[in-house]
Length: 444
Image (cartoon, rainbow, N blue to C red; front, side):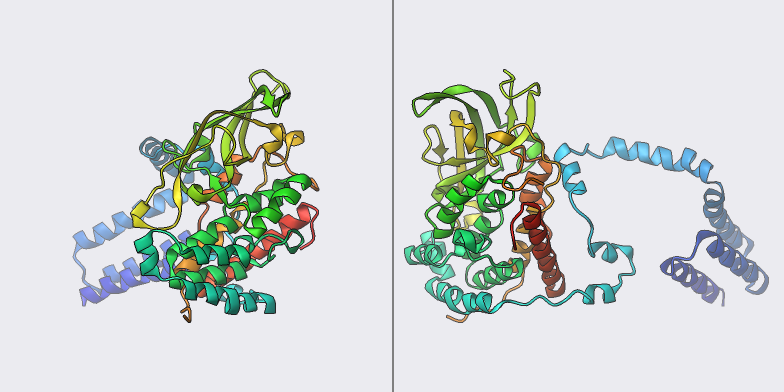
């Protein structure tokens, strides 16, 4: 009989916690139960004493919050600050970059599923569905995962097919020769390719999520967009995004790569430009890229652009045939066949026009780049969910891409294995992209 009283007590406390009953009413209910237990259960005195001591250990901090903060909360925080590693600037910016969206419901313990189900179901357009049923199926039929693993490369006809049919231009608007597909369509294409070959899917995903195209769409000048985006759409340029390095990984705030504002010779004339020194590795598509999206920290020690010396994290578009750019020996991480490798440069001089956004914005800081994680919000979801293959400035934005922008673009990754979460995350990504388009003065 005593065991039953104890079981009811434990289950009752768990139920009150699950219902999120306010502390004082919950403690009152437990106190009444302990009194009843002492009167009717014939429980031994030592056991009741233990229960009442535990009850008081909870009751006293609840009714005396100042005492709790001084003698419990403050020492605990102090201890955590000593044992936890410090948060870097990049990590802080990444945490502050967005919202918890519906994910917050999951961690609340009592998610509102109706709220999730209320999001409209995403749909492919006829053009998007035709692309999946046509060129995507054809590409799947061209490759064999085993053969790719043996050759450590995609077959030449697959590369030609991807360029011809715009697989590297899924997110580029039609006005620049791209497909202008939604985030959901991008995900569905990547998902289908992943059922045939993970290396093939990675090759298509990276230019559409971490490549210069998205950066140009949000921050590039009209001249940069008109020059690079059609070339990227036609496959004339193969892009890569160079952030990860051997010393700092993908932590943009800790990277040692620098670009110093200075004067130098460019095409026979003295111009103000950047002298870049960097070392990157594990850069997807790096070995075959013709256009390098380079992340670095910019400095102006001679104050050629103004009073500020530390200009922060910036991004530049560097053609890989620029003198001084070194494309290193290809990496083979985990034996994967997708193109991956290092690149570096020492005292490579380029004009300020190579900065994304152009020289006019070289000193303007970027504090709101939350739209950059768009591509990465569904790439990993696409690879995790398989479906069988059957054989505020219009024109340009600041050059200084804040740590938040790069960190979110590179490591702001959310994995979604369930179709409901992935579909709705992709719908959110489409909404973010449309919002960014309006902010940049472009139509959807």
